[in-house]
View 1 (spheres, rainbow, N blue to C red):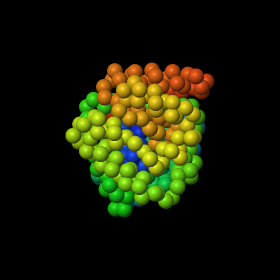
View 2: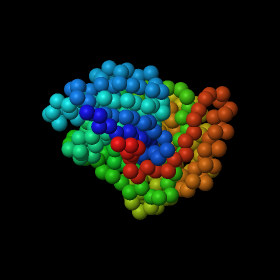
View 3: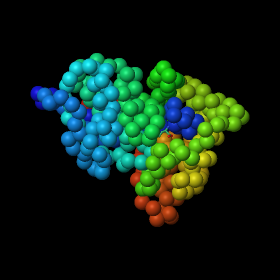
View 4: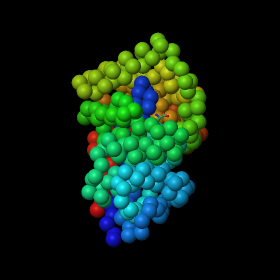
Length: 309
Ligand code: HSE
């Protein structure tokens, strides 16, 4: 038995400022590759990891755990081998663990002739997120699996909605080469929210969703505001305020922490503005002496892509 698939598992930007744990979007040209194959030997094995120092033991690997969750529901004794070619650095804030867990379940579902819906795949992939951060959030795995922008309307029961993605939106992401573990970034968040701030936040979530569907770029920009999480987490990210100021000055619609950081995203209308934003935030970071990567990417409306089967 040697049926296999090679896939592109994309990076994602979670939260999108106002939507902590519920909003996310999928990037187009940043992501991992994976080769997943059926094996006659039952069980799930991570046979290769290239580009990162991550555990090969199935129960310690996000892809392994996510596929085991899928096979538990599939209820047949089959064998799966997984090779992971990591390009997204762990702890970068652009959905490194989500790419692996979403990519693995998508590939296995494809090999089994799609017995599960995308919504079910989100639930399996969330098991990987639980292993990575202690919390089964879906705001990275959902856009990786469904593509475009997604909203987790509810976790219990799981209800994930694909939102409209206006054609001209382009992401600029700067990834400072420091690691911020999601579990650590989650530990700085307060468990209670001030009602006035909550009102502002859910107004922005509604505004952002409306702005996406009506392609109202100014409304999207006004809604990219986080009054609850960003003030607490931004202190973990060098030059966050200066990057944000530089991005907005160059015309970005909005700018905020990508997922749990340290990456910072800026959303712009048009590639030219997104490139100008990249240049200006590069200037800010060059002064710090820290290494960094910058990505400029259109929104990937498809999500995970088949490279070869
Ligand atoms: N919503 C998550 C967080 C995304 O901000 O902690 C990180 O994976």
